[in-house]
Image (cartoon, rainbow, N blue to C red):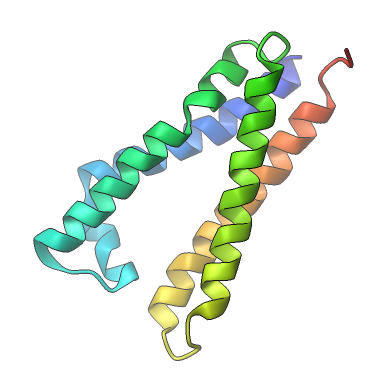
Length: 128
């Protein structure tokens, strides 16, 4: 169970760190999505707030992966949706949009690695 906690805890920590950075320093990230000024800051901050919301099941799964097995599964599904959605989104961006494609690709790698990690952690849980 401890390795399962460690796996989802690491993904949770990285997700929360990303959320906090988006909320506290949006201008650093806005340009990577072709956004500028106050509207760009608000979009990035709003995305950071969404990241916080989306991590609620991760918190429960981290607290007790066995007791909150359903939350662990929800986290896997949410991570998979993010990974697949980002890949589909990335594939629709024209090749000449290098900065935008690069920003989206970082999310694909980030969420793909997180997905693999939490699936691994889930597979280590005792079977019911």
